[in-house]
Image 1 (tube, rainbow, N blue to C red):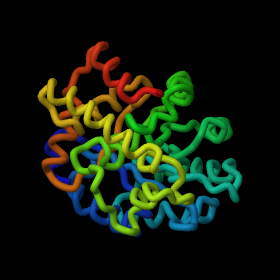
Image 2: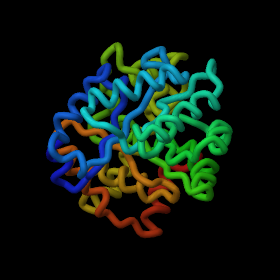
Image 3: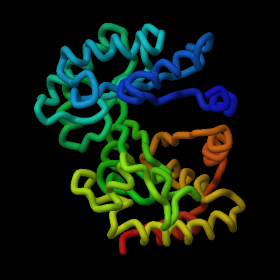
Length: 276
């Protein structure tokens, strides 16, 4: 994380369910002595994995996150994903109370669609929406992103590297751990649904990445840097969240912010990943 700060990045996105809270503890260690220099975003999750997004669960979750993060507030507190058993109005009302109590400066949602966001807005403004967005997952591009821009709501793109597909890390012979959802999706698991790793999409996406690599090589940058740059160039996307396992990944990801994509290059990339 120290390398992250050294590159100029000043915010970290985490969640109570990442490592069962251990991620937040690691963040606390990394920001010790520099809390005022770093923006902290975290999330509360439904009770299948998290504290629950009912009012009581949210009160419990924010206190737990603040204790693990060793801070008195977070800059952005987010609902990690919906729980259809609980009215979104109840959830969002409790999130608004977190702001009123000074425990979070702003509140947002993750994995939400427009109808749910519209139900939240009259209770308290939604600062941001964190949804999956990448060249291999553009579900929000046509409708949600333009609407959010009209509403003045920020959009944080997670999975901008397609969970490894848009890098050099995955190929046709890649074997995933049995617990890895990507391998389960590739095997056609109904639980994981249809996505970029599904049998009907996986090989085609690898072919697309090869074509993207040609564009990246022409520009003299890694394909992952180009893929990330394309995500942040998308109109309506405020920022992108890219995980990094080592300092080299951090450097490559950060370089995406310096990449300029002109109209012909954007059109070329979109022609590769556009609908067939």
